[in-house]
Length: 381
Image 1 (cartoon, helix red, strand yellow):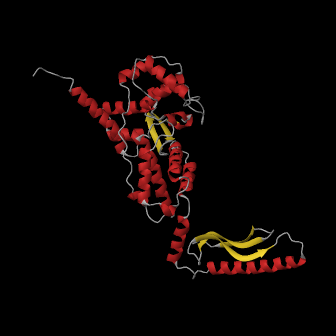
Image 2: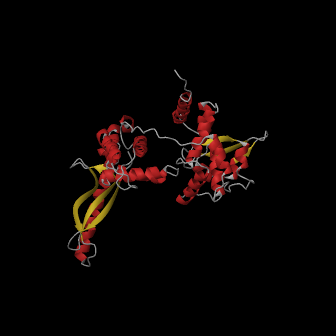
Image 3: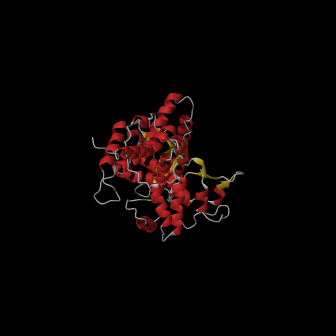
């Protein structure tokens, strides 16, 4: 347990007087109440701004007495024999239990500098609403955590009028909540790993839109009012890179070996994993003349509703009527790789997935395509 520091302070009261008290840091357990406290009022008073000689003398005596009490308290509290190791640990947990989990979560969210920071910020907003702004660590129980889980599954989405928060968003936010609990356990703020005892929200399987090779070739031949966006999207289809990684791609991350083969060395924005991604000569042909060092490869590429409109217009002009996003080009890369016989482990590595289960979602798409294909052959039986 840390050394207890004690300051002598004054609190103004009526009649131009001040009450003397001790300020403890960190907080201690009051011997009178058994509760955590930061203050001990001494029952001693002074008149700080008096000009009366007698009152000034009285003030001096009161301050000397208060300072003596302060020294005694500090010596007593910091003697090693006062608390056994177990008692010190219990005291520490009790003090930590008075901390606010909502504020702790907000601090974690603010420290995130990855692409999922917005998810942490959104989770904080729902957590703040659920807890009404405060939730002590000592009040965190499995039952209360499940209440927050149910809250996420039934609450309205903050960005859509009268619409309920989607199950997949709720699952993502609850995972951030669980991650914060896990971190609090590592930090020694809570005694038990509550996170491991809380059932996560199982997300729904989402339909991943992707393009066939024929559709991709149609897009190659179709003009786009934003050529930079077109090249970036096709680059994603040929490399499997996310928009966040493409927009931050710099020339010094592109390497060429002695055999004339290209690769990209980068850190994924989403997972923060370091990756070395081999890329094709066709992908290289989309980025034009090499630039310098830390200059952006796709300089000027931004994410906005205006850019999305250009993307939709380009896809529609190619005769593709499905709802496609920029991320659909990454899905296209994964699906075409598996369709052309690349094993799932290799595809998983190319996509930078940490878990093979994530890549298996694409394998299900391929299995469905096979199922649809065999049903096309009909004979008269």
